[in-house]
Length: 504
Image 1 (tube, one colour):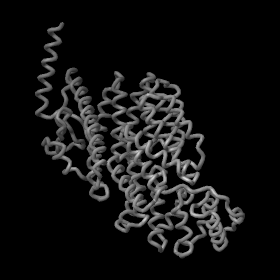
Image 2: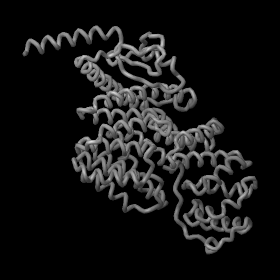
Image 3: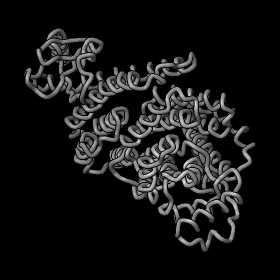
Image 4: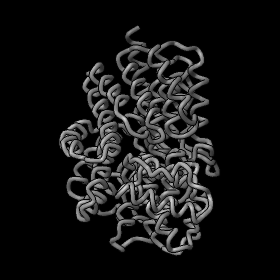
């Protein structure tokens, strides 16, 4: 979603359609279009700008003003103006124009799925604008929160977006406040807090209906319909959820990149939840055609398809799961953050663990998930250091995050319990689980029983002791059992064997 408002439709002056490409004529046509459009950039004016932008000079004061108007419009210029936005970011004399162009570059990178580049651009803008109190600063905060959302950094996203709301309200930026509140809804969706999502939608929808601009109204309405569908799905109201998604198709206005794919993926989830596997498969196929297979959303689609194929009894699921884990760990998937990797790996493990031949792959998936959980903690520590704005949560933020933390801790314990069952099964079959790895091994071993971590020196430390030693680089992790827990496992296996013999 754009971090600024969408453009309003307007009837452009006749000169726009025939504007010659030379600089003076382009300037005259843009000024005429701006006068006719009013406060907001119309679609016709935006199309004109795309045609003549290359003839403008970012170092000229007048052209800088014209460029700034379009950079602050509600639309992302899109891939066709990526090169132009980069040139403005380098050459514009006005620092705020440079900052805004860099923010647009980050926004375009986010739409293209290049989340690391988006994060880099937005952080650079926030660093240069921090403490200015200007419009660019609050929009950079909101944009960074949006990028955090895409990377599934729920803590950072919630704190940054809530901060953006406070800054938008203080500046009487009503539309920026609406966009920020819609992003809060996205955070609640991300962490699965459907109760707060429903309550926020109930508060927000009446305010959205008062929006005068039809394009803005359409954008907000579509987002609300999709979020409402998620709430209805979580309550088992599948027909109503599908109705909310169909309502999106009847709302006009320009679509943002990824909107259609997101809607189709939600439809697939709803059909899957109600057991309509073939319809779900058709929607997943359509969603896959609408984007990359290696970005976060593409990997989500592939994970959903794997879970669906397990339910359908497809014979290639073990091989498919192994290939999907390769994709999660490949360098080409660097824009898929650790939170997403953990989520996908858990889903893979839970699905493939029910397949008799899939236990080894399930074990690998749990290892990937646990390693990602460690990386997420490191990422959070680094983010709080680099972005001080994320270290100022409100009391309500802390309540939401604490509840989410409890759910996350429970899920992590369930992960270790699942791995412990796999290790115990291997031991019963006569395959002794290695209590530790060689000191020069590339993997980090975590005990599936007590969750202590083995250092390269063979010392077992708690997570709190281990993390400060590993603040740089990714962690390649595997599960095992520590020296303290192994005797207990061996004793339990002996008891289990005796009970089995007695019963026989």
